[in-house]
Length: 610
Image (spheres, rainbow, N blue to C red):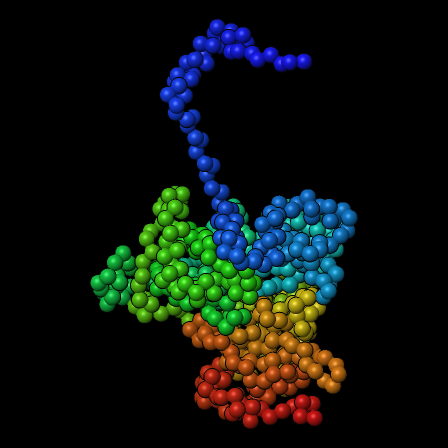
């Protein structure tokens, strides 16, 4: 059957024909003009990541598996998959192991056939209600304990696959999130643990850590970076925040009128007397680098926006083809500080239009014309210390290699409620602080802490003892660091009397979660051959430090068996006690003593010599 052609006059009414005639005339189609083109949709914030990947592939480079996984799947939108895995009691496989970390879930096989969940506690602050709730979740969904991390945070371990959803919803009920606590995201935001109560602090960093935390949670482009990322705020308090080990470190400084007068000229333009934050970038001590001073002064109200611009510049230029060189340090090495900061300014310009109060221009000022930072007390995170609030003290509680049982968590919460202000602060030294205690209640608090099997005082060794999870819970670790740290401390306390604090850091692998390079004595795990067998052991480093004494420790001895480590560390410390100058700290002694001299002083343990 032949189809008939239909004309407009045969199908439209007179009214419709008049309407169409007016539309065509008004649009200019009769004059041969095209219809207006709709504007392109606005770029989504997360396009910065896809654009960076596209540039690399267009240049013929191959993305690492993790980048391919992020391109194919949104790690923040895996709720249905996590639920399905929980329902079927399944663990993720392949790159989904990596993607589940966006939800804070780490499948840690083969160390444990279970999940670990890392939280987000800005500035390490947790209230007593949350602490009790975490204790219940540890019992109901995990292994009945929690580990305090070197980012002033909690990790729950031994989580079965069926318990993941109950754990995540339980955390949400407590007002705690785990989103983005792993994978290529910004880790827990740290700050001075005595913020707001420290007699010598320059700035209370709690509001900044909280603001930064919520800013990250509510800006999707702050996820899926080329690699993990750390941000810290140091307010000049008694306890160091170790901000110089972070990708972005903000260090509070005070500028006096006299300092500005000495500066005069271009380097003092825009600087007024007051407190600022020095911006430092590129800390990654596992790769033997501290954050370096940029020379820039940032006002408190601008820090979070400046962080966003830095993260955007990193997202644009970070290496997504080599995981080993993907951190911010390597972008800075490649571009130089001046080149990278120009990119930061480029990203800061549009952000200025989005903020309620436009950020001030970044200004430079000589560091040596700022007032010196108030001194750090290396033992201030342990024991009883005065607060700036009259009649109040805080008590630093020692946790054995950072671990607390659920019963201890509930007990600490009860102490904070009865004698404090209902909250505690975790520290980067893997312990916690109970603030706002009246002088009259100090003895009662000490007794309550002791009744929990914890302590409020520590030896010179235990006060600075840091250990990562180790092989008992981490698939990367080559040794059981927590057990060996305890053995070293037990041995040293029984054989030595130290009159100065000593930081001993044990880390299980190259990721250096326990930051062995900044310890007075740092041990990184390895496997040591004994005949045909491989045994747990360590490479031993000495002379690390942080803050004004920052230094990367140097290797002193390789392949120390874990069973020999207590004796080797004892001999290192005996050499220090026997040969130090009056008032000389261990780090200074280690740096002036070359490896050959040091080895001659310590000799070899009998087990190794044999």
